[in-house]
Length: 303
Ligand code: ATP
Image 1: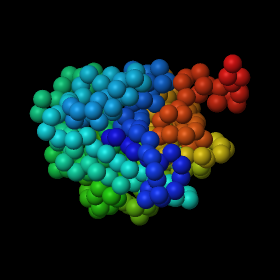
Image 2: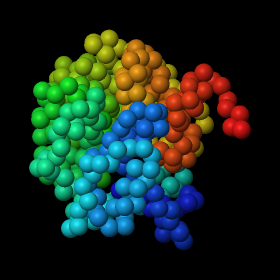
Image 3: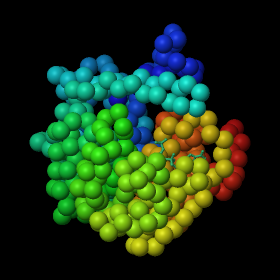
Image 4: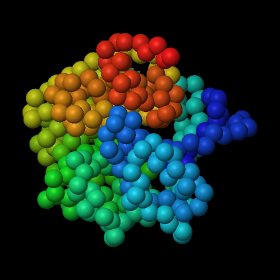
């Protein structure tokens, strides 16, 4: 989506100017991976007009492959406005009927997906429309026999669908998911639960690996039935948005680098922490060297 946000905190009604950025969980993950030197592609639909090119150019400019993005003439690019008032962030979506909400499995390059080591999907796409719901489900089904593993972030958005609908969809697709991400807040909203016992219950439905994000507390994972925990990094939080996406990218990077589960959690926590201590949903994210400096507690001289 195009993201329009006032440069200073405060109510939108008083804003006299807006910064034009891009927003979207999946593009954040793809950009975060690309920064870390991992080959990543982002697949979606945009309008073929200027807003569409704004999104496309920025994602492509981050080194993400956008060759499978469709540019449509008949539907606009999704837009959202965001304001930060005190500690809370509010969003206003204009994405009904958007190009992305028209995504369908017809004409999708399945080979492209099948060649990926991980296909990362989120619960936001199925919340956009009935056709997006069918698309997400069908993509997972069609990739069933391929080497690509499915990573799924619950990413519950109460402005797009109810907790009941999100729960129904998530539970339906769980048997096709290899790696599941869920936050403590989402666990509470959907399953009225948090902690290790929920992970156990979810793992029985299929995912080999389940990761629970716990904000500044860090994270907990259930890998092959084994619970593993890692505390969060102590950092000053300047911008909480995007932590979950940075975390998912860190965990996926850890998988692709062949790190053991505890190290994967450490890298994911570091990415989440890096995200909250820098401004922007993805703008402040580290490259691999910066991530390593952070993990080793080294300060870069920057010159
Ligand atoms: P969001 O929806 O805001 O992007 P989320 O709700 O999906 O995030 P969180 O649990 O808030 O997920 O954050 C993801 C990860 O980022 C946490 O598990 C943790 O590793 C890291 N993190 C988040 N907030 C902080 C913080 N204040 N200090 C340190 N690390 C943090």
